[in-house]
Amino acid sequence: MNALQGIEGQLEWGAQPRPECDVGQIRIRVAAAGLNRADLLQRNGLYPPPPGVTPVLGLECSGVVSEVGAGSRWRVGDRVCALLAGGGMAEEVVVDAGHALPVPEGLSLQEAAVLPEVYATAWLNLFQLGRLLPGEKVLLHAGASGVGSAGIQLCKAFGSPCWVSVGSAERLAYCEALGAQGGVIRGETLDGLRDFAPFDVILDPVGASYAELNLKLLGQDGRWVIIGLMGGRKAQLDLALLLGKRIQMIGSTLRSRDAESKAQLLAELEQHVWPLFSEGRLKPQLERSYPISDAEAAFAALASNEVQGKVVLVVDASLN
Image 1 (cartoon, rainbow, N blue to C red):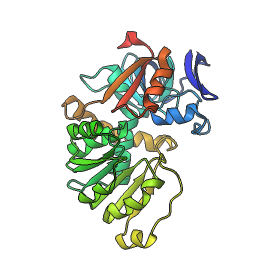
Image 2: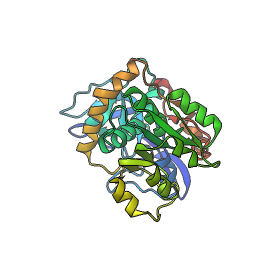
Image 3: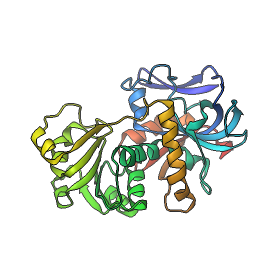
Image 4: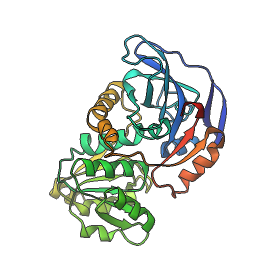
């Protein structure tokens, strides 16, 4: 089979060994794969896959089940999307059967390809780790990103008002159209967020450069969930403020979690979130699609920070 790898900063589409399909697994003929910032980092050698995971890029995909290992609920021909530790940008991928979800009714395979990673990330960090309750206030940094777009819609669906920090007025309008109450534009000043504080939960992919402000913006018993380090990895913190407010600072990654915890996470998504797509209350924010032969352009688009929502790579257009 052919697959996409990042080798010394370059993308290479070429032959790779076909993975075996074992007990409890399924083989998916890939229609499309979602592109995430983790793929940009891995391509540049900054985010290697966990031990034992394929070096093929791609943390989410959609397609059609072509082989089923024993002990699976799936059947050949089922349309699915899947959360992966790697391997989605390939003609085929083998995945734990518990890490796949049905394509929501009414969605295309391209739309489904951009759901698993961002909705799993948003649900894990807002609702499981952040223990978000209806009525609690949320701040989403990088609100127009894939995870931010998912987070806004989930906050709206489950009754928690949210605000965002974004890079432009256009992006702020985009977030407000999705359901955000408001926010501020990065580059002007983030101090305007104080007007909306205190927040109960902050979802933070930025890290060090926002650390001091986050402590000031959180309210009593606030939860600060850090999921990325775009703004650096080292910060000085006023620990007296953290103690006085009883703030919980939570570091979180999804990719390295074990298979059982991922299966439990996806089971919750299927129960609580997936029906909302069929009802039209949630919508995949697919902004751009590229054929796999134009992967460099897709990676450049995401790296430009001009994308609102998600980018998808189409591997097999005949399946869509």
